[in-house]
Image 1 (cartoon, rainbow, N blue to C red):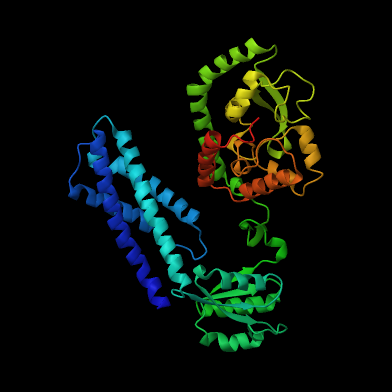
Image 2: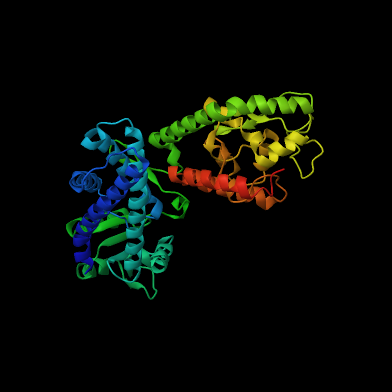
Length: 456
């Protein structure tokens, strides 16, 4: 059954994908008609559009849902397919070639398809995981060489049944446990009868043996994977660079080192911050500036030196919420802080004091989402107390961040708070996705509306 499933699943996925896309397009047709921006099209007009969707999906091999893929990877792949589809539709589909509401039509089509097809794709992923967790569509695997991190991998196979990997045991000359099937020589004798799909090689296996195992796997169409040692088992995916015929592991590469990822994040930052500047800051700055000036003497903006990407110092902008004092860099604001003005208390409680930082985003010093920047004296203190503290400066600081939406915002009263912030910042940096940024922004809005406990 495990072989037949791999043959039939792509066809089953493609057919159901076609039917769901046809349904989604029909729903989009109804929505567009209700909005009054589309005259509607007959069923036959949507057939070529559904076929276009399937063509793009098949070319992108969306039916290949990796055994160890998580749901965000499925959504990420789906999002790219959707963008290709919308672009092709805008150019090729005849019913959209006329009319004054073309971009509204495309946007509504994208929203409807994105919602319904997104739910479908994630549902397929969930069903597939549950199917594999019950012992179906499995792949047989062995580990050649025991020790180091290989027992941890065996534990993963045992715990994550949804990966659908049936671990048959170790082959090692020194190990002696219930899961050891024999020595290395026994591997070459038994392997042809084990119906193997995967061979995992321990990193400390002798190079001559590694080559022999790989040659055996090539001759028998078996996939081989190397298990990195403990020093490479980091909280991130490893990538590789090629120097001629030599490959090296990029040990501390992060997702935003990828030029396309970095460009996507920067384009979103500029567009979003530009819209905020035009439609909000254009009237908010004069209004808040007047209120600040009426209550106390001093500048409208509070400009503070903070550490940004690669520890570079930049001028962080805020609306001034305190009376001018000499302790702003070293003393955090506390509850009922006498330095905070009345308008300042409102600004801090509503987080409006942070709004000028959208100008920092436009200037390239900050991002919409990222680790929150600390003052220079705070950084000097924390980096001597917390391991890997400076790693949070690998990327641009943000107006909001993962730590902030997880409850670690405002005054730092206990050491665990800053440690938790750094841990969450580290996770964000090493696991960044565009979808994660969107999720953090949505949660930030929720926090601003319903959780003001630590804002003072």
